[in-house]
Amino acid sequence: MTDQIMMELAKMQSKIRGYELDQKKYVEQLHERDREINELNKKIGLLKMKDNMIAKNQSYLELKALKDKEQIKENNKLKEGNNDQAKSKPGRSTTK
Image (cartoon, rainbow, N blue to C red; front, side, top):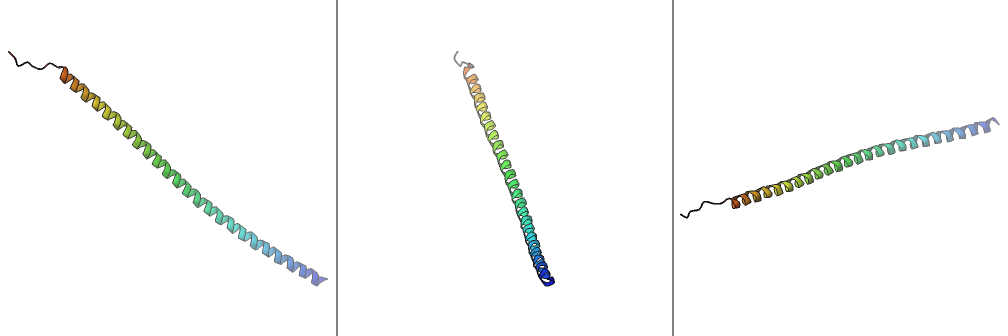
């Protein structure tokens, strides 16, 4: 009877060691997965920041282009106004 109990105890200890090794393996896999998730989150953060910077630069350039167009229109209006004033002023008559 004692031998049988010792055999059962040895089997149970073997199972416990197997479970402990499995648990250790699963914990390591979880840690590896967490590291990968953190790395991917960092990459996503960098890509989002890059996209935001691109969007800011693009909107800045669009706003600058719009202002430049408005400035060109304003300059053209001023030129037309100067040309109209020059045409409407009477010139000196050279006849006597």
